[in-house]
Image (cartoon, rainbow, N blue to C red; front, side):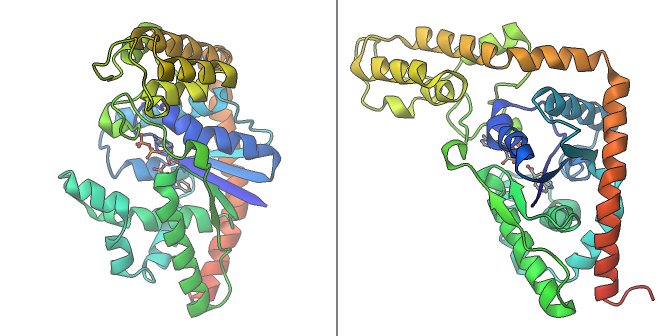
Length: 322
Ligand code: ADP
Ligand code: TRP
C-alpha cells in the first residue's frame, strides 16, 4: 500500500497540524510505503516572500524529522524538486470541470475572507490531485479540512481513466475522527491564518503566554460546568496529557471547584512535556543541517523513480509524445 501526504511551508507548524496530519502520517510508516513532502509550490498561493518560503521549508523539514518521520522508512522530499508534478497538473487540469473547482470549500472560504484570488489559488486542488496521482497513492492521511480535496482527486482520476483508459490509482482519504479538528485558542479551528495557534516547537515563555490567553467564560471556579467537554483547554489536554489526567480535570471542571487559571497551567505543563523529546531531537538536527539537506536530496531521487514512470504512463495514455 502506498501512503502519501504533504504539508505547506506557509508558517510555523502547530499542534493542529501535528495531531491532525503529522502524527497519523508518522504512525502509518509501519503500514506501507510512505511518501511525505513539503508542498512549497502550494505555499506560493498564499505567500510571496522568497526568503520566508526557504526558511519555512527548512523548518518544516526539521519539525517533521524531529517528530518522528524516519527517512529509512519514508521517502521525504520537497515538492518543487520534482517539477514533473506541474506537467501532470496541466494534463489533468484539462479534464477538471470549472464547476468542481468553484465548489471547493477552501477556495470559497478564502474568497469570503476577501483574499484576492489568483489562478494558482483556483487551481490549488488540481496541483494537489497531481501530487497524489503522480505517486500511485492509495491512502492520503490529512485533517478533515482536506477531505474534499481528496474527493476531487478521485473525481479527476476517474474521469481521466474513463477518457484515456486505466491510468491512475483511485486514492482514499485517511482521517482520524477523534482529532478531526483541533480547536485553537479562540475555539475556532486552529490555523496559521487565524493567529490562534499553539506552535509545535514554540518558545517556552511565548507558548505559556498563549496558553494562558485561551478565551474562557466568566463563570466562577465553584460553579459546576456541565459543558466541560466543550472547553477548549480540556479538548487540548485530551491530546497532550495521559487519559486519566484529562478525565480527572474534565470531571473537576464539570462538578465545580477547578479554576480556569489552574486548568490552563496544567495544560501548558503537559503540552511542554509531551513534546520534550522531539524538541531535543530538533535541536540536534538544527546543528546538523547537512544531514537534513541530504535526506531531502535522497528523497527527491527516490520520489523521481516513481513519478517519472507514472507521468510517462499518463503522457502515453493521452497521446503526448511518440
Ligand atoms: P493551516 O490551517 O494552519 O494553514 P494547513 O492547511 O497547512 O494548516 O494544514 C496542514 C495539515 O494539517 C492538513 O492535513 C490539515 O488538515 C491539518 N490541520 C491543520 N489544522 C488542523 C486542525 N486545527 N485540526 C486538525 N488538523 C489540522
Ligand atoms: N493542501 C494540503 C494542506 O494544505 C497540503 C497538500 C498539498 C497535500 N498536496 C497534498 C496533502 C497532497 C495531501 C496530499 O494541508
